[in-house]
Length: 214
Image (cartoon, rainbow, N blue to C red; front, top):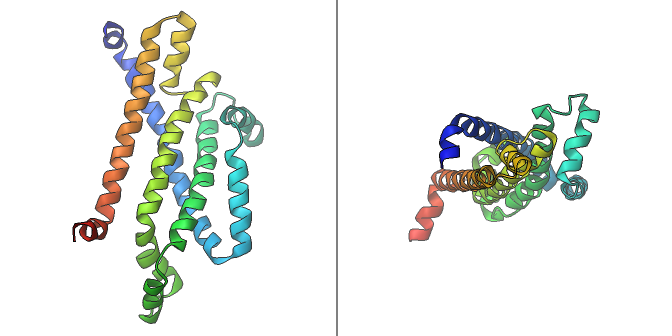
């Protein structure tokens, strides 16, 4: 505890970096996955290609991707952009299937009714399909967010890892306290983000709660 009090500025700075590195890719990844998932539900060949590529991409080890991206992007090895791009790719790979499956699960009767009421495809997607898909998409976001929070710590092996840098510090000094602080901080961050997503999902789908209560 004494070490934490003396180094509160260091820990808070690493925590802020960890949040930025983990959650910016979630936001960008979701923005990319929504149109890709929509396209996957409309064209079977596109679906096969996207889901196959996503599955293959997700098998690439994170450290290998962190190290190889500077060559592709032309960035420095210690640039945070490498982590952000890598985790964005992982997020898209995870969420494309989630979005496609969520949109496919929309009741055909509801979609038919919306079309009969004059909803054009884009309006139907925004006003009907997407709201119905929110619970499944939020579940995917929870997995992606927790996964990213964990993967950011791997970045400490190349000098960019948010709270993961406390692991490196602890190992280098053979000192347990930074390791414990980094571990507890990472777990706490994952729990807080997960709770916020659960709450946000409930607020965005009041009809689900109303249906449960009836």
